[in-house]
Amino acid sequence: MASPSDRRAAPRGPIRLRVDYERMNAFFADYTKNISKGGTFIKTARPLPVGTRFLFALAVPALSEPVTLDGEVTWILAADGARAGEEPGMGIRFVFASDDQRHEFEALVERMMEESLGRYVTQGLLQRS
Image (tube, rainbow, N blue to C red):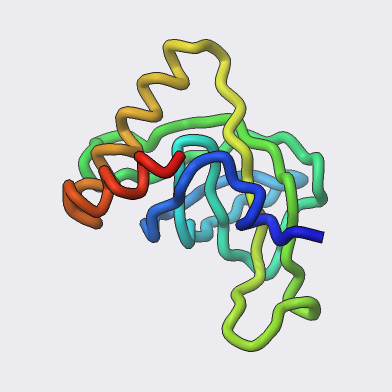
């Protein structure tokens, strides 16, 4: 079976952002390992079950307010299933309420990738998708 990284529809940049979300009336703060226009990987020892849809807030340094998004857990890597060097967590697919919201967020991700990786590396990554 192909690994989740082999099935990605969009390239991911190694961008670390704080993520706040709620689970059963408890609040969590974790960090992304990477992000793309379509999803992210949240590092956590407490992943939500596959198929869970939830609301979360991404703290983007360039913005004064966090970006609030809906997401769906598409795969998890439990701590006991992680190989050496792998971090436990959950793969998230972004769920957008409208095309406008999707386009706005995709532009934001491109800007974050350019700021983090540089213009040419980002263009190379995005041309592969």
